[in-house]
Image 1 (cartoon, one colour):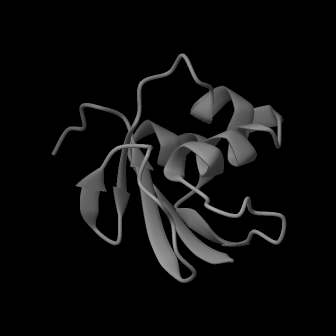
Image 2: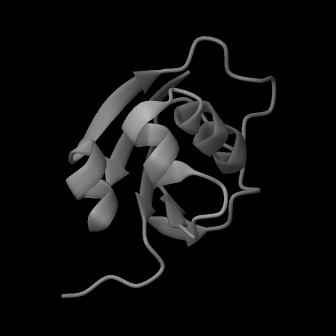
Length: 86
């Protein structure tokens, strides 16, 4: 499964603007929660920025959603803090 990741605000500062992910070992019915856990399992900056206690907002294909939303091949996923400035 290929996913385009985008990071915003403090996540962008920690992880960069984004990345392309080829998630070969994705679960049968992947969700945004599973993706977040997969990325956090990388350790280092990803673990710190995407850790479970940290509140985050997410969007799938430029539509706000919650972490129970199912992913699809070619999805664009964005993660950002709950409050961002302009």
